[in-house]
Length: 226
Image (tube, rainbow, N blue to C red; front, side):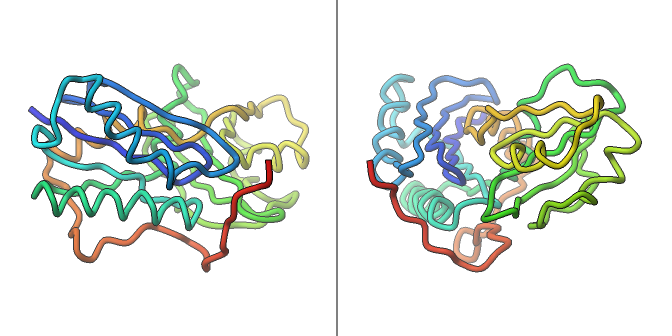
């Protein structure tokens, strides 16, 4: 049995999911451009625990989205996860943000490429490439989008672009084999099965030394004026 608290704070979506053996018990999230993580994360944790009628002592692991993504958001999520692991003496599990995004896509063609893309700055995105089995077939990297981007996949198969960076890519290409999913954001709900698989394998992080996968140098993000 594995009761796991999943935390996702790598983007504008502050998301918490409580799951047992990979099955979701409760979830709470808010996707806000104002980056509500500092105010909402611990509130959401309390709310999902209350909804599932469980106490913190019932948790058997904490899973956190490891990035890439917002520096500030990742710091908040990882700091909260580490604090809970220390307090409860439970293991820490890290989940690739881009892989959990890719897992939101269901029923794709067997030969399709799934490319989650998170908006970085200007014409930059964070991206990785997965096949329909969610095997990663190209490394995660930060890249500047131009007419040559992703040509190895665009020229040979159908391609699903998903996430906040997909809008930038859409402006460069006009091809019938490209499908854009602009509304997909990283969510703790998709972490549930991935974190439980890692829990069963005892694929844990060193709580003391674990750091998020930033990819880029720190750029301060501030709340937008309402």
